Image (cartoon, rainbow, N blue to C red; front, top):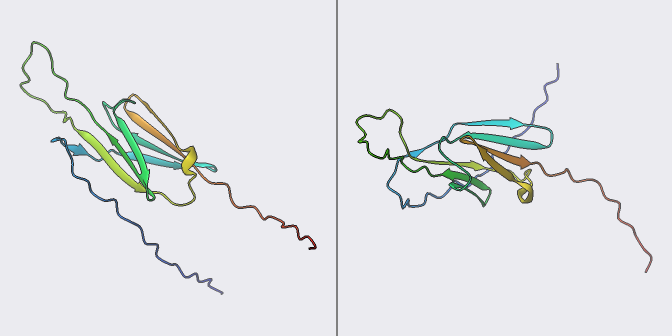
Length: 134
């Protein structure tokens, strides 16, 4: 019985740089579902209370960062006695490989769910190079 052996090289990834927060609020790590299709990777992030105006998505040095802010809802004419639901901001970062086409990333949000479509780059096709006489 032949056993195929492959050497695996560890890839060095850069950790996201922590920036100082300017808001004094709780920060939640949104739960995500990641689905891979033939031509794209799709990320669904649960961010209740977030809309398209309060979402911030950046891609810098192979680090995709998603964030969202939620404002505390004040009930006019009422004083809050007890609350079980915590309000705060959302932040999460992912390392993105070179297999993602950065120019075609799409994002949408609906009912507090952020959907990111990360299209894969097309594989390099062999190219015939024409040789001319000089």
